[in-house]
Length: 176
Image (tube, rainbow, N blue to C red; front, side):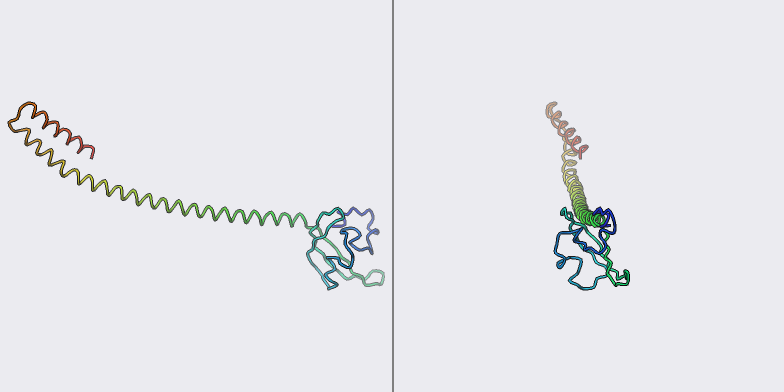
């Protein structure tokens, strides 16, 4: 509580005193917890201690009878740590949301690139199949004519050259 933070030796020291005597250096007529003289039962405020430290407080006002006199009892609960923890939590939540958005964007990009790569792979396969067909047909014709020519009456050198064409064609077909 605020009382424990101001290190009062005796509770009688603060009874009947104004909180500004202990918590903040401001004129009592401009006290931030007076709420412009309007009735406030519970409210959240920020008070400044004499050393300048700010306290997030919950203020409660209760009307009590003290020795036959109706007085207002103001109590303050320091929830600075809670407020700081809440701010850190909110900051972490915002950072997490930003990271999640970035992750979603990167996942979407990866999915799009994967789809493009699959399309490119299909196109490559179709191209190779078409090229294979386009090369096989003339290559088979060359090999066939080469075999027919190799059976003709040729010189040894011509026969070797024709066989080189046939072997090279068969090598190319094996690659395809």
